[in-house]
Length: 351
Image 1 (tube, rainbow, N blue to C red):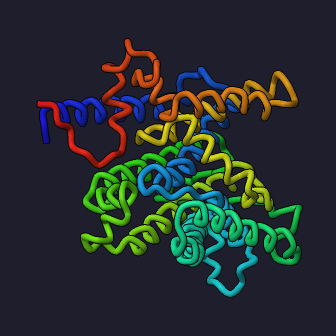
Image 2 (image 1 turned 90 degrees about the vertical axis):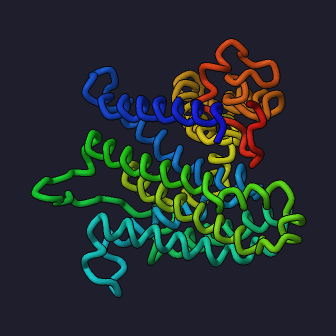
Image 3 (image 1 turned 180 degrees about the vertical axis):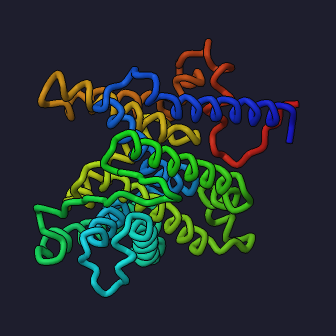
């Protein structure tokens, strides 16, 4: 590791710690109302969703148009378990944390099955397969009225959690804020360590040149499938948080339009940096709220803002902050520790 790498890592650690501390004290500042604190929760949930997508797109080179399949699977599994509709399972799964674990496992299994089918094909065929299979799952959930509630969905009411003599009421915005923050931080640390491990380096090599990776003996399909499953697992985890946050799960959580959201958030923030999807999620939620208060055609306005960024700044807002493609050069050095380098897998050559 070069001196530049060590400096960047230390700056990233300090900035990350500062961000976490700021998030911890945010509810106590009184700056945000309960409504706006709820928006922060939504941004954290969508940030996790977008990060799971970018594990496929930014670091493995696989564009999925059906990522909502695992998001919705996690949400529906949690809702069904809490509602007691999974009678073949022990009653313990009607509690939040066992139901959460079950939902994540089911999302991973669905990702394993669909991923196995999708990774057999590459490029555009992969993208089309992810979309087609996810829409098949959406249609199944939509028409299975007796089990899933059809278009009406399922109400999600998580009972209070008894944890070490402490009662956690997930309906309370402040309590759920800290639970979501804890899950997001743990997920970020896990994904960060994963992509900076030898496993992550192999994913990058597969993204850059799958044929060369195959020639040197890397089981490309196996690694692609494993990344697919990991991404689906975290998408399912985000789906469970989304279900508790919104108090209801409907087929929309599996719709193609829901799959488009992590794509837009990642492109908005920038797929080339680890924090890109996080920045994109925050901006996405903020812009959605701002524009929806101005006009009923807020989706059109959101598109007008996102399209130029995607066209002229392929590295998104992160690229603009780094000074890429005519961005803000003045703050490049200050923010380099936070946004990092592009995930190219190449070592820094500076001395």
